[in-house]
Image (cartoon, rainbow, N blue to C red):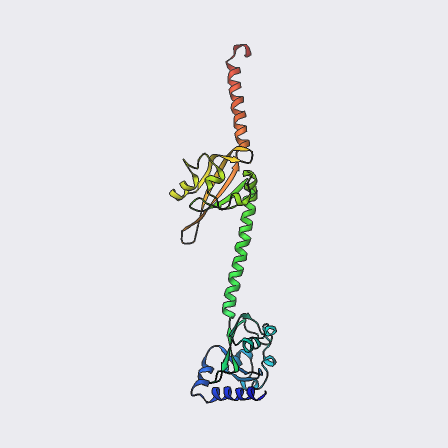
Length: 287
């Protein structure tokens, strides 16, 4: 039972050392290359892996791979996976406890003799530090954007009675809780539905502010409308703001609503008071 692994080890070592130019090629590649036998003994290490590890290649030969490499994927050993099912293994963003650089992308593939028997495994280690830094930058940017989005949500919630986003086709993409309460509707009754179906505004068919803003490439501020609210007809002031990509393409529109019921009531009271004052001033008996 032990003879096959030893024969495999000898064959792989002979392949690496005696094939014309192969050793030079492996030493020239920018990735770390490690060859182990079925017992997981290290048979070959190229110069790049030695530099990554910070040791001499000859000092690693003959050791078990876990004696020189302690990666966070060792608990799910790629060697065991490859030898058990014969398939290749690839792991991303793996870190080694003894190698300061990284993270790494590790690929492991089985090596077979001419008869098709697996006699070892070839592992390729690619330093993903640059890509990792790029990913970290993206994650940091996403966190900043998420923070700004929540901050904007807070500002809008504090300054508006409700807001929503919609596509250029006037399909509602999102709606805040205050708007849902204003309309007396659930989220699934609003998001994904056409604006006219959601708001039932007197401007939907004649003078839609979203359509006007897109057609004229201008924002609309305080468009007076009458919509169907939770308690029936409701006067509102609606503002529409165009949100564009860095390339200038329209991504969506932001709609901000203010309940104008109190303002309209004050206007009516002021109008009635003014009318009564005029009536009184015209009556001689009241002079």
